[in-house]
Image 1 (cartoon, helix red, strand yellow):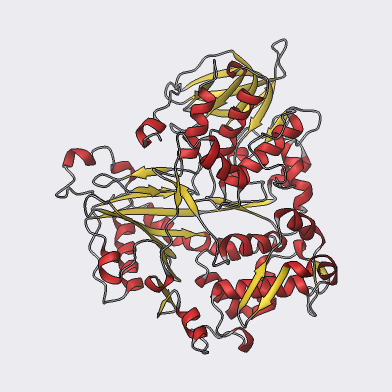
Image 2: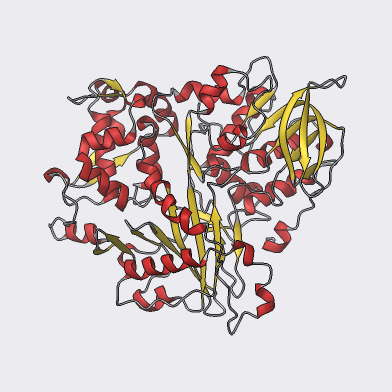
Length: 574
């Protein structure tokens, strides 16, 4: 097993080579770009020298970024944190293909009995609903829920809505009734696999009297549907207590159904991560790609746009800016993979032959970029362990803070790590103003952290005002009985900034996703230009979504066979 320093020590090229030629140019060294480069260079019949990878940033991984703060051997996640065993590509890569370099470990969630919810100034343990149900009672909250919905936790109420919408449609019942079950007062199970959902989502209708009767569910927004089923107060409860505003925005309701019951509202969902940091999967892919002769990751080189090539034997010329030298340069290629999210695509020159395509412009807008801020905080003591026994897991609140994650303490000392604010969507404007304040938080030395170790970290600190507000909200969330000291260091990340535009994406209502996804993988049938990544996938917000889109693209448009290590029955999406 490789150490983190060994894994991340990969050679990258921050210079440029004007006139470079390659068969395939891949732009974006996030999950989709790295996966595509690795597969093409190892299984695509091309030498590494003919598959070149370009990255605007000085690091790889895209929206995967694992960091270690001074004074502790605890990894903090600024971006993607975890995967599910059901996500076959990422799980198999970590647990089999790259098992020599990566170690899969459980993602710590702890027991709900130790975790908090603070909603409308009401303090609750996260297991309050289950405990009340075990007593034959209904847990009351300060939300004026419909009588039939009182006593349900947010997860259970999400499941109830999904179950009712599915089983109200005669078309669904005729085909899948045996795959969903309601047992007991609050419990539901869904045994629908990804292939089932792919058939259900375009066909499902909303079969309830009212303004949306008989509408296709993929024409409805999730907010529209939730309000119709549980009322606006029920919607507010789900948005607040569910932890993520992004889950309950008015995105495509048909896409929301499997997302919620498969990823977020299933109490039995198992999560895993990578020892030493989840971005280890990105570095393992990069290492395997770079092992091929001539393979290269051109970091700190920004794609500005591309044109048809005048160089004989090549179809396209890509125009880059080398950021360290501020030098423009050109690359010639016969095919291009734009492994980029929506905002990064929009930042490219839009007057090219490729983007002068009305259908492409319409489908670029098929997804909603979802802004997200993360603030890591280092403490000298794991106060959450000492005060209320939580070893890991998270707390949820309707305060702008939204969530905090207890990442744990260094096993060899007391220094510990907290994700102090994990907020998204409508909570982000609150923090945006505070983030812009020029006074940065000043890291301080501790008994285990020398001043020298803090040098060079000022540029990643949150603003002092933001830290002050986070601490105020953390103390309100946990109550006066929990003493919370000030942090000695922070690390702030704004995923809404260019070129990302958001931490994750969601499908717009009204789009037929089963048509848009294959279109985006090759927007112009006459061109060898492809778009891949999490944004236009069937598992948005997950690394697996990026991998599935890339794998479909490679099989469809580069002639690669499904890899032997991937279950032949695994569904890659539309």
